[in-house]
Length: 454
Ligand SMILES: Cc1ncc(COP(=O)(O)O)c(C=O)c1O
Image (tube, rainbow, N blue to C red):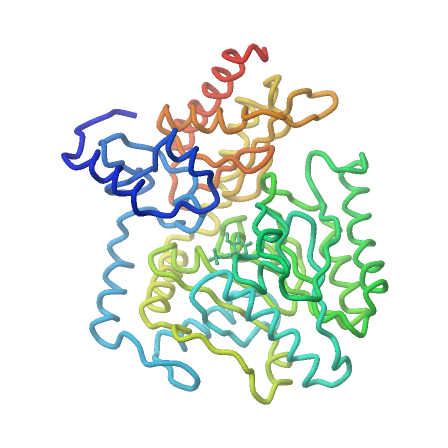
């Protein structure tokens, strides 16, 4: 895309960022080499940086939150109006109307009887809250009063606070923070392209589900409070489990009275073509965590939806955060959800995402360095491989090089381990998908040629 004018203070801003900002999850050296990405404005899905270069943002603001695109006037106004009318009233039993309306809406949108909703400020707080709900539920209900353990999965990401970190295994965030909260253990999770046991896709999914039963027995069923899982794992790019996996997990959790927490912080609110991934897989968990797209990133907000009887088992839920249910966040979410419904965005996202997946598969699916192009709804991954026969991942920085090349050509994606990811906004048009597909194909080929891989 075109370079236009250079902001007069671009160099000074870049220097100030180097001097004063902390960059998480990236080596300082890499930021110094590549520079921080400083943006000045956004419109639709087009971002403009402070030097005037424009990009098609195929990552929904990097974290996948921004499902509505930039510059949505309706959401901005809803937040402004709410802040003026009543911005904040505290916690405990102090509420405002937007929070109550949103709780009612989330109860209606989530599957089954997840009818009690707690609001927090983001994803990690939602996961912390879910884990604490599970533990207190077992204590108060009395059948398994010593259940404190949580089972999670290899490569899971559930957040950065200490409780969420204790069930996290991805991005090297856990080990540096250890010792963490006791009681967590990890089992293998289904992966789409390769797995450490060399099993085929369906067999590995079945193995991972049966492993859960063995792990519960090994840990002691009376001590296990919950199993937590991203329904589609983000590590190494959009790992879609076989259809039988989550229903089998549901049945195992039921057998041992272990609560099933689905972490839908990425997958919730239309990312994978349904309101929640649980709908896609046809299961009802006991607890769902959500954040990100609930406000399309216009305000920070997270939420936990739980079964009524799980919440009612606790006479007091001993947990609070100052900004639980903040009225600007809940007003943003109400407005955002109203737009989804009015514009039929769940269906549009599902259809346009399928169009993008098909276009990408046709454009790059047979390329010698592409192992697999997969996706569901508006969440896609292109898995690169150094050898299509053995499925070996690249041991060098080829994945990053492809994403950097895409960026140079004006399309934003994200490297995620052995794959790169695309998580476009639900408002992305087919013309924008076509433009992105062309750039992605060109970038893969240019990097492959430059490195003599083809
Ligand atoms: C699946 C999942 N859970 C939890 C979190 C943590 O959310 P937050 O960064 O809002 O604290 C994330 C963030 O990326 C996530 O992807």
